[in-house]
Image (cartoon, rainbow, N blue to C red; front, side, top):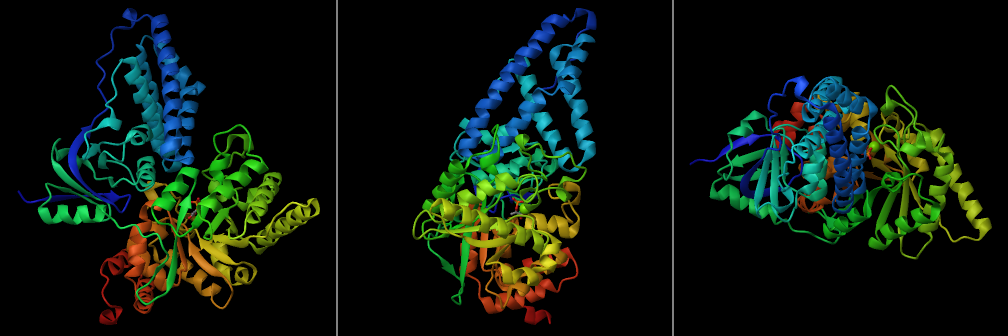
Length: 571
Ligand code: PEP
Ligand code: MG
């Protein structure tokens, strides 16, 4: 039989060959009995027991996820515990039981109401609907004494197909047994997608209802790079997928075909990520998101704890550059003990450097003390520090002043320290427009395309309804990048990129052609990007970049990227 293809959104550029195992966790509830046959006291006690058990399960899963995937991803389970104990939800369930529903029907009714409300809100709130579904299904399973399909012990070579995968489902997947997963719903920024990247799993999401036509036991290829699922693949497709799965990890520096060195570094959020950065052949750390040190705890880490974490990163990449970003909270990154304000538009509010120079200035100073001490901790370490969400030169100057005064304090205390290399992230249109003014005052720029795309396009990151607009392949985003690189020319200021765009191997030639010196990404795609660098010739990449930059629309950009023909033929 000839192979057939279903299109979706590939969330890792990885391929896997395997056999379909459908995961269908939802069991339909039978109709409830008549209200007079329901004993409310018994049902309330069942609900309470299920909640207690759910909380215990969530804590176990949290710990496992923190270890296997990362602290930032594990934080999703804290949100689940909060939902589980949210008085609006528990009161809703209690009221429904008191009105005569058995516990499972009361849970189903109350949670489904909230799911619908959140879905209607769209955006980030819409994404919370998945969390609510996850908790609802967990409670329903516990109430029915149901066994969960054990996703952690599937037969080797399984490809999991599902309507959707919740964070708890995804965290159970064992990358040594599972060849990939494919879902009916979901987008590039869904929890399942983020987990897939951390676990280095081939994954395609958002395939749509057509996925239901693929039966259990069918042989498939999950082609994350090609954004597709191939059903009953022919030998050629399988061989190509297997070859891709066997990607070659290069541990040394890479050069383009014509000998230009491009640094391919890793984005890390946890100490576990450091390990995979080393395993995937990173040349250094291009973005150390320090938020993880501050999440899931009652109070901020002190100077010594931070110092230890920075030194551990420097030791993992001795002689290589380690770029640590100062605390970037606010926006979509809440930290309970910081008492962040309730803002209508948190992405346009007090986040990143705005908080460090404002309400979190004491924390900022502590972090700088730890960073300057780490920078001076051993010869041969190369610490760089960058500031998130900078929009004005004043912010840069104020932050730098704080670095200088902290350095003076350490000096007078006789504490060993050093001034690190100093840079800013280019994440706001303001910073991109003013890049020529910033360039003389910094050692480097690191372009954060996740935020840059959302602010250039006025399209919230993570909001699926505007994901096409917020795509980094929009010509306006490419122009902001190009303007930034051009502004740095002639200054002693290198330019890196640490947003998701940097990790897309299909864009490596374009980025090299635009003049980016360093690409930093989630460790999973490092080998593919290194491979793409070695195949790039800078001169033709520059012509290619000019050709892509000249496109009028995103679709045209996508066509020009895919159809990597010589620009000369078009002109
Ligand atoms: C970015 O905005 O591109 C970035 C790398 O920062 P974060 O995703 O942590 O906001
Ligand atoms: Mg950002």
